[in-house]
Image (cartoon, rainbow, N blue to C red; front, side):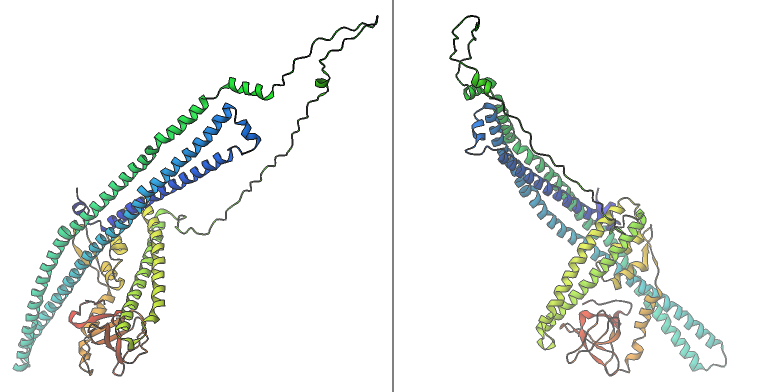
Length: 556
């Protein structure tokens, strides 16, 4: 069971799956982190609760703790402090053994994953270049064969015409031979390129991709093992404090068992016993004869005169008011959750593609500014390097913001696509296969050819692409009129203000002639017309050289 052999054509799905795996790992980290926060909060609340009910010094409450029930309650409060301490231990151990370790591992995993998929895209780009070379050679062979046939027909027509001179017939024959020779050369070149492509394609599908996917599989399996180990650690952290928590609970039970109701009753007697004897019987007084009334030494007057204090119940409980707050509903959710699944997926994919294009544009601009700064550092007369720092910082911040936004939408997209059927190969190739490469070159290539189920390729060359190739082929006819012959053409990727001597200003999208290649100093010499020529930063232009007139492009 190997991803390299079983999933050789699932590059995009593996990329999404591994990203999903990292998301799961980060979700588990977040879960553990929230658990640690709950443990800390719980411990804090327990400590505050125990402190709240501790007896105050030099107060009547302190006297009440003579009773065994109150002593047991005080012991319970003290044990709750220790109990809270164990929850703090759980939080600390989970943070150090799980959260911190997994966070470090996630960063390493992201770097490793990025490296593998970078190698995969590089291999894809290489096979695409080989395919373009094959198609170019094939078209050239087809064109030369047609021209050879026309030359042969023209020769036969001239040879059959009695009114044509012998010299014209001989010239037509030589032209036919030249065309036939060109066709043979094109045939040999096409055969050679075809063999090379078949070899490269075999290496791609049976060596490079299996090797990369095998590494990705091993990386993913390590992630799975790691999250399993973390779950075991999660349980062990709890298990380690169970004995101490058990001791705390045992002490609470022990304190409860130490309560002695008889002893507490005796303490009540000792606290409130007056020591007086109950009053004796009252003698009968006979008023019919003088009698001497015996007055008892004991009297109930004191006790009869005492009244019970009134019990006053004061204080009114005021009820709290809990208002119900209604939240305003937004017009359109950011994740397009108001749409049906397929429409939502399209919207999210469109948003991700737009963000990726913006990121690529910003990255290209950052690279161009960086190279320009290096040139200024080597050649101070060209400009001030410090003047580019603000722009470089601004571009880097934009890239970071766009990346965060892209990750958010990709997460939503992955969620939606998990509930939808798999997309076609063409859709996957257009949406994600070469996003990291230059969109002007690679995206057009991904649209020009698509993979059929049996592995063959069909050409869908656009008129725009053909026009660009033909324009390059015919540039040679005009080079002889220039003082310095043009060696190719270029297209301005960005606007450049040539304010220094020897430079020339260009506008984004403008096409110009290249008359001198970059000599390693980061500058390319170009010409707009006979009177306007100068240098521009190589990173600001996309160069098409005549020696690879079939579309080979140089990115500096």
